[in-house]
Length: 163
Image (tube, rainbow, N blue to C red; front, side, top):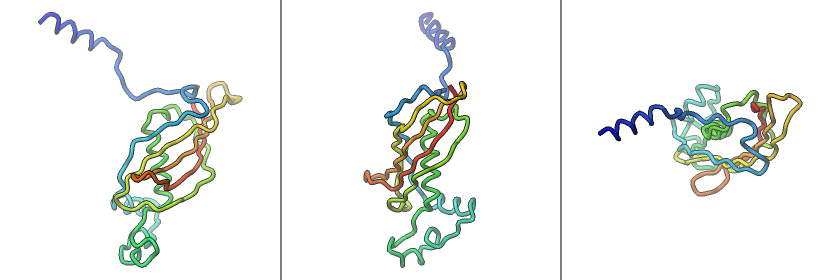
């Protein structure tokens, strides 16, 4: 019993583990970071429309959408982009972002349908020091992929990250 108590005391004394605290130097050019996935639901489409005012019938009206080339409702492009950005933050590499600098080269390659599961595969294009000693720059190429391995969206995003 004493050995158990000693082990328990050692566990309590160990440094707590929490969210990773990655800094700028955690990634270098060429590194790839993969996100967890999420299954897009009708609730995502309705909530996005309510949040943004994007009440386009292609996303919310099944009857209308059934008459389009897609044959059914599709997710909003900006929703896919935002979810892609959010999914990558779940990796822990973005806990020290000082500033988001923006997006480039956004391309919607194919639609995301209700029930599709998407994740992000991102590659570090640029990891460089800046003139400011407390931050470095990351530019990542995002590829949003669905369950069959096909690409649904690509974009590039840049961040200033604490050093």
